[in-house]
Structure formats: C-alpha cells, structure tokens
Image 1 (cartoon, helix red, strand yellow):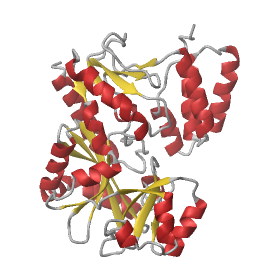
Image 2 (cartoon, helix red, strand yellow; image 1 turned 90 degrees about the vertical axis):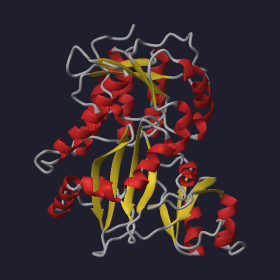
Image 3 (cartoon, rainbow, N blue to C red; image 1 turned 135 degrees about the vertical axis):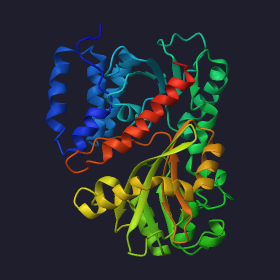
Image 4 (cartoon, one colour; image 1 turned 45 degrees about the vertical axis):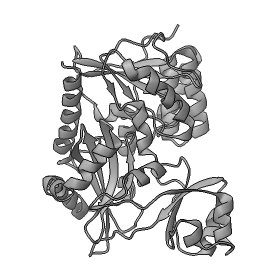
Amino acid sequence: MPNADTPFLGLAPFLRMSLAGTDLKPVANAMLDSTQAHSHDAALWLNLATVMLCLGQRALGLDLQAQALALRRDYVLAAAHQPARLRLLLLMVPGDLSANMPLDCLLEGSDIDLVFYYLPPGQSLTLTLPLPEHDALMVAMSEGDDNLAILQNLAQTLAQWPCPVINAPQHIHSTGRAFASVLLQGIPGLAMPPTLRRLRSELTAISTGAAAPAAALDGCDWPIIVRPLGAHGGHGLAKISTPDELAQYLNASSDDAFYVSRFIDYRGADGYFRKIRIALIDGRPYACHMAVSSHWMIHYVNAGMYEDAWKRQEELEFLTDFDDFVQRHHVALTAIARQTQLDYVCMDCAQTQSGELLIFEIDHAMVVHAMDTEAQFPYKQMYMQKVRDAFRAFLLRVCKK
C-alpha cells in the first residue's frame, strides 16, 4: 500500500525553489534514495517525477510519472486552511508540465482542497466511474491532438454532471493556436495573426524557392514565426526572415509539422518589447504580470526583470493602472471571454504600435503565481491576491457556498 506519510506536493513548491535559484538535484537525489525503501509510495514517485520535469529530464520524468499513476490515479493537495470551504476535482492527463493547468500555483495558501485525478490513457470517463468526492469539477488538461478524443468523450459524459463543471471540455479547443487565431479574427481593436499548420515538406518548398511564402502561407510573408506543433515555453520558436534561415531552422529540427504565423513588430517607441499575462475569470480580466525585454521573444524569467529595477517599476505602474488598460481594450477582452466560453483562461498579449491588443496565445494551463521574492517584488503579492480572491469567489459562487 502507498505510504500515507509522504504528502503529494504538486508543482508549486518545486517551482518556488526553481525561481529562487535553489538546486533541485539534491532534492531529487534524496527522493530517489527514499524510493528504495518505499517502492509502492505513489505520492513519492509523482513528486520525484515533477522534480525531474522541472530539471528538464522529460523522458525520465514521464517514466516516473507513469510508475506513480500505475499505483494510484488520484492525489489530494489539502487546503492550507482547514476545514476547506470546498473540494475541487481537476481532471488531468499524464504528461509534462504543460499538459495540465498548474492551479496549485495560483491557490497556494487557500482554503480549497484540490484533488488531482489523472485519466487513464485511452479510457473513457463514464458516469459510473468512481471519482473522488468533489463539490465542483474542472477540466484541467491542455488542448492538443492527443487529448481530442477524450475531450469529445468528456463533453458527452459531463453534460449532465451533478455538480458544477468549470471549463467545459467542448470549449477547451478554443485555446488551440490555430483555432484561436481563427476564432479571434474580425474583433475591433484586437490583432492575432492567423496561425497555420504546415508540414515540413511545405516549409521545405519555401526554403528552396520552389514555393513563394505568400502563396504557401495564405498571404503571410517575411518575417514569419515558426514553432513545432505542441511546443510550449518558446521551445523551437524562431523568427525567420529569409529562405536560407528557414532551411537552417528545418535542418536543426526533427519535427514533421509546425505552426507558422506572421511576425508583428510590437516594440515600443523606446525599442523595448512588453509582454503581458492576463487571467480572465468568469469573463473579468486580472493582471498577472508584465515583462519588459530588448528581445521580441519574452519570458519573464529571462527578460531582466530580476536584474533591472526600472523594469520592475514599470511593471508596478502597469499593475497600478491596469483599469485604464482594461478600459482601453474592453471590447477585445470582452470578445475573448465571449468567444472562448471558458470560465478561466489566460492570455499572453501586448499592444501593437497602433494601439491594438496583440494576442500571442490563450491558454487555461498557463502558470499564474506569486512566488517571486517580496524583497525584489514587494508589489506582487497584493496584485496576485486579487487574482486568487477572484478565482476563489468564482468557485464559491458557482458552488453556492
């Protein structure tokens, strides 16, 4: 039987350690040593799998995860404040850190019990399947080709579910890059270039001059953005400006299919790029962060936010004046909530040089957290608490608690 003394930890504590610069290798080694005496401890194996995924050891992490899920498929992350106000069941799928929404990062320190239930691969969920007790159910798996069949099945199964269903499965496909770029066309004040799925052979034809980019890419011309299907966090993402650059990119990649879109130069008058993360909760927007960088491909952790005080000051000003941003982009933000029909969804966005809201990606599985140190980011806790409070209030409202 699993060792009840080992708590399931989720992602949050390991992400916090990673952001603080803590070396996770000793943590992984200590867990690995513990597995020698506790080989049937499912939570220990799943915690170790998460650490390995944080360390970039994807293959090993997925193997360890499979070992944990072979022992048990439900894991409880108890609320920090007991008794819990409600119990939220998250339907998950096996996979890496981008496969499911990391809701525990947002709800750290809350009074909400989270129950992670990993659906067996290829198995349908039926009303007769014994699921852990819950007050509400949330579809937490990411959009993707691998999840299409199970999401379709869940749409039928959950249609008459006896408790509230959050982020109904039939709407998860709204977050797909290609689908979202079609869904959000024609909205006043919103810019999202069409995202096209293209095979390697089609891009090879462009790189050799056998096909013109505008003809092969539905009018999209240089420069273009290319990324492999299913890639997250900027992996394999590149801006390509010439056929030769495209040929070099393809030579360095082993993928067979890619997303392609037109590059929009969104730098400000001072030459810096600014990327914003927003959470839409029950249709209302909440600011999560803003990163400032000299490079067009922005990730908060490498944008210089930790090194440059002026960037943090600008982020504080943005968070302080977020209501003005919302008013300026009210039509676009309202349309995103209406079109996606998701109760909780995040977006990475910016403002174009002409003042439109530029959408890079919408996704309910983005990481939203308040783990940056208060010494460097004394303002973060207050604004992230607004996001936490809004999501908690939404849960209590739909559950009528």
